[in-house]
Amino acid sequence: MKSTTKLFALTTAVLVSTASFASAQTLDRVKQRGTLSCGVNVGLAGFSAPDDKGNWTGFDVDYCRAIAAAVLGDATKVRFVPTTAKERFTALQSGEIDVLNRNTTWTLARDSSLGLSFVGTNYYDGQGLMVKTGLKVKSAKELDGATVCVQTGTTTELNLADYFRVNKLAYKPVVFEKADEILQAYQAGRCDVYTTDASGLYAQRLQMQKPDEHIVLPEIISKEPLGPSVRQGDSQWFTIVRWVHFALLNAEEAGITKGNVDKMLESTNPDVRRILGKEGEFGKGIGLANDWAFQIIKQVGNYGEIFDATVGAGSRINIARGQNNLWTKGGLQYAPPIR
Ligand SMILES: N[C@@H](CCC(=O)N[C@@H](CS)C(=O)NCC(=O)O)C(=O)O
Image (cartoon, rainbow, N blue to C red):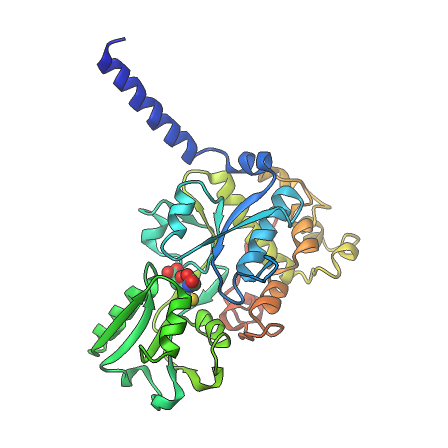
């Protein structure tokens, strides 16, 4: 073989292997491995945080477990991969993780050029601003000339710039790579304002020395639809992760809970029977066992149960369901039917 031909063959091989990796069947790889590799936050109370024994809890963590329950029949078969805001997309692109569940905002650039596909919005959020009560500031409009602590690699950084520019307010950003560093800096008085997703602010306030001395201002300055994302190019995997989210919502809507799911197997309600795999062959279409949704609910719970236990009324963070309520209760959470 001439050396140019050799070079051509080599290049083609590399191209082919990259392409086949991108479209490789993630489902098969997860099944072969026997564990789901799930990208989560390094530590954000309510969403994803390890305790001192290395047990992970949180809203995003439960989404990882729900996917493992659906795909592997076992919610414990998850390897949690902590990622910072900056690292998270590379972890998915490189194949290190199968899915990213890390308080990540769905934007056009991420959903296209960055090589990700968002499966839906599992938490409707918006960006907030926190200040010390001692500053006596009541509105974001009073923040002209403020120093603002913000995390790099986030939508937060971009919205902050927009908001202050549009409202003709001057500000000085102090940029950090990790939320912990911001927490320290903000408490030490290195900045007047801490800005991030409102959910993040409530979670971080609990970690502060004196939570009562900080308020979240009334303005919500952006839309932050948070949700799971997968690599582009594997539509089967995309559909699976998307329907795990929909199954969690449909289960709540149908009143199926972790506690009653066994009893619900005897239900005559056709909707309940389809969700639990007692009627129809809906698992087959997405490459899973017919009891895929039963396993999610039995082992992890429904959407409302996850929300309550991790970030809602049953948790220390105590965030109201608000927009994250089901559409039947005035919220935005709406899932297409399993049928
Ligand atoms: N939703 C926004 C912000 C996500 C984000 O990274 N938020 C910060 C502040 S709450 C965080 O989770 N930091 C944890 C860390 O990296 O230590 C995005 O997708 O860019």
